[in-house]
Structures are given as C-alpha cells and as structure tokens.
Length: 51
Image 1 (cartoon, rainbow, N blue to C red):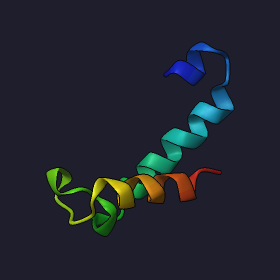
Image 2 (cartoon, one colour):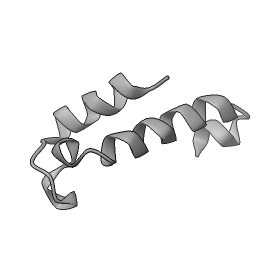
Image 3 (cartoon, rainbow, N blue to C red):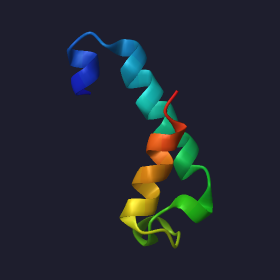
Image 4 (cartoon, one colour):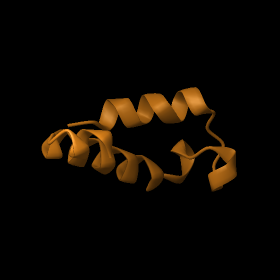
C-alpha cells in the first residue's frame, strides 16, 4: 500500500502478485494459514516470486 501511495503502482502489483502466488502453494504457507512453512521460508518464497 505504501508503494501505491508513492505512485509505484507496478512495484506494488509485483509484490501483491508474489504474495498471491506464494499463498497459492499450500507448502509455502505458514502454520496459521494451514501450511507448514516458517516465516523465513514463506518470506523467501515471496521475495523469489517478485517479478
């Protein structure tokens, strides 16, 4: 949301897309979201999926 506020709509969309793709894979979700990944693994997966 901060990136959108700053006018960086493409960067914001890239990050949101990466989060959505990560959450789409059950193995990359943290336990509170029904997966088994820890926060480090989940965060790395999001970072790896950013366009």
